[in-house]
Length: 470
Image (cartoon, rainbow, N blue to C red; front, side, top):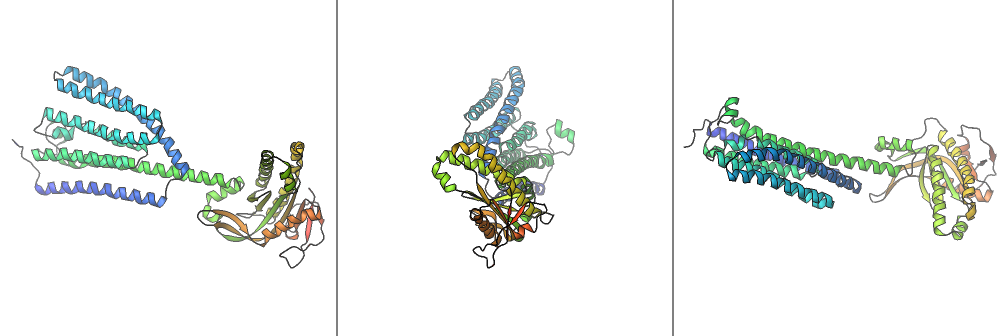
């Protein structure tokens, strides 16, 4: 005989509306996360590798937890089964725990294999198996104990362990897992709740009657518990999305920082990465340009084997780059055997003339470094003779290029002039030549020699130049 229901049809309609609201909430969240992912763009290759490493580490953690849970439940289930005279109950309990442990052992083999695709596939298989296993036990005991009433099916504490399965998806870095788990749990729970309502059930607002008796609190059974499933799943999905976004942001920032550190000094890198839009925006500003070129490079390259040549060039570049960074300069580019460095880019020094002074001091130390290198490379017949030209003026600084290939550089007449001044070093038999624009900004007393005015290409008037002793 069916029990009389104390709720009316309008209430049933409200419950149905609530259930529909839950499903729409899941759909809205899924759409929102998909749109946000599209805005963020695809993961970088470095971020993908980091996430795969974390997925494998998380899989090992989940696997250990599965063993702990399996061992914890094995004892109680075995004791309950041994006390029961029902062979079917013994078979169901022991079969369930053995199936769970079998899945866990299979999980261990997949992890040892190390293939991320197999791990992800097994995550899906384990999710469906765990939920269906838990819900299967609920269904079996409901049909065994009280097939005429499904109140046990919706009130049993086994659902809390289903919630644990939902929460565990947060460790697996796949945003689809918790969403699918939500839908699966809600549908199974709704089916059992629907059978309960069809059979007829007496509702109550007394918590003691709800916990200890056969009556149910419809608000808790039909709304609160499904809402808990949804919230746990959505929190897990959001945690995964946030973790993936954070890994992508961190790896992108570190990759960018590593790239910048090849050309900028550490202090400039900190400045750029802390305020990228301001530091690297296109603008005109005064800067000091240094050009360094290796003398007789053609003869050296023809007389050396490729390996020796590359080792020497790498050693020389590395040492000179560190000198540029020491004086707060930036390596704009390597042009064959030449180096172009800038001082005052992307932001000029607070003290006027400091950038020009840093450039000249840097050049003098570069000459000293080359003399020291002669002792190392003399046995190969390599002499580290260089010429350096320095000029100051207003340049354009900013990102040049398209989305496929872009670089931060400086353009302008001072760049061309600095290059032509460097080209005069061999002609004038000097190692370091600066322009008048640089000389007038110097903040330090340096040994200068005024050179005869020289006309260079692109300039109407001859340049007033000075030689600086190293």
